[in-house]
Image 1 (cartoon, helix red, strand yellow):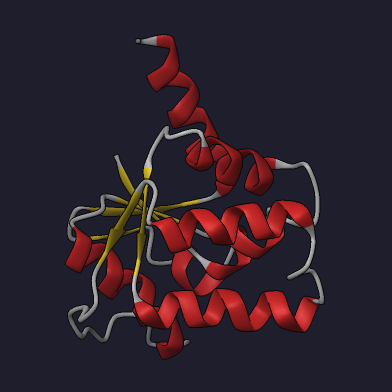
Image 2 (spheres, helix red, strand yellow):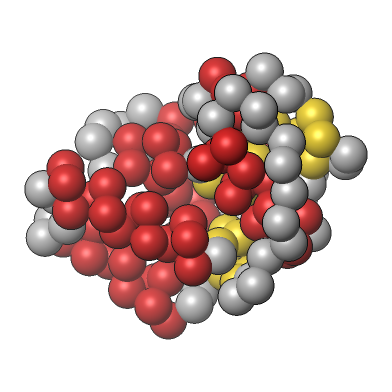
Length: 140
């Protein structure tokens, strides 16, 4: 399964043990493929640096996985789109999903969540995505 994680979900994963942390942990365990573009990676790193957690061991482990491209689908030149009228900066997540053929964007951002679905891409909260992962693991 290919998934795009909004920056707020990715960064929140390092700040607690809640759903975002569980999602990133399950990605590192190979339960889904993380879809990325250069723009998304730059934003992840910028926010991690601003939060001052880039030197934490778990953060380093996750960034190493990204560098090794483990469980990653990468689009170096994502499609352009104009979907999120209230916050055009969020278009990068939809563009990534379109370019990588992801069917899910996980977000806590109301600008994205208000869209609910774009073409065949669902935009859902962390808890809803964890529920999907749980159902998938129960069916294995």
